[in-house]
Image (cartoon, rainbow, N blue to C red; front, side, top):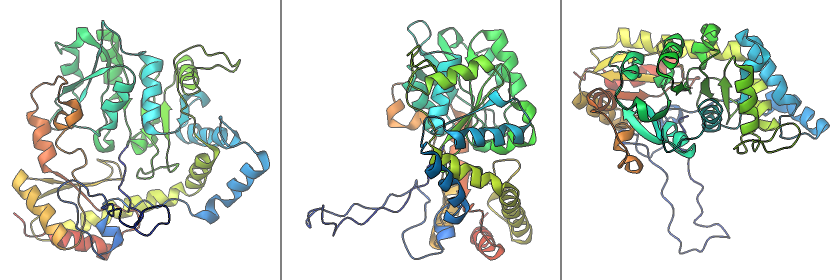
Length: 410
């Protein structure tokens, strides 16, 4: 659910803006982002999405024009859900599309655990995640409580959660598939059964993991995907709930439709979380060429691995697909100082970098009053993980330039 900053529109000479209004500075990423300049756009931006072009989606737009059905779970949305459940090899109810990854996470929380309450107000979650995880829980009435992660998986340890002293105040547990790594769905289902607290897995970037092993789509524990433009499979903006529970997915559908059933009765809490036909058109066009996209993702990972093998010593190891989602190329530095030096070396060459999860959510101002465990692992991971350019159309020369900027930093 990571949003890549986009250039700001220059409003200084806009007719609707007074001439003396100061220009709004373009957004900057966290420390380590490349400075402004005229560099290669595929390298200046850490993620530069490439979605189906106008020609690829034209036939689907014609179908929208013909049906005059633009939202409210129209025929293109149904067609895309069919493509996805067929792709995964699961029952048709097991994939439900929503307007965003956050909408999908909120709907899954409400459908599975319900809203937060006085007796169980806490949502246990990792601090090492994108801010959307905690914000979604808060919008469902929960107060985040942050746990540290396992140093090897970068995710919550199911057994540590099962023994956590705050469980008696928790209404939901939100494990996160960090950087699209593979979540242990069976382990989480077993823990849920033992502790009696509902679990919803934020698997925002893990589309490829479920594609490789559709058996991970579980009956007892829902998983949520982001289909944002920066993800490997995208509807430009969107999300999905993967869940084999027919009744659970019925609740997801009602919650994301203002709490209304097909009879137009408002039966439960809800909101407008429906994916539009235009976004479904993008997803259908994306699926038409998914094999080509997978080849591009694999090619970028292979090129980075080859460039790293040919380079001099690097300040750490590269984490590439399939270990992480193809949406990411991560440099896991040996020390925080090397990570800072790596970001500086990249910036000096006009190459972007990013600390995707920052220093952890427990450092974000909005969470200053929220409880958390000691965070030695999260603090270290936040200091040593550096996101490198990961556009799907990077070529070997561009990737060699990135790796070359890091070579010799030890």
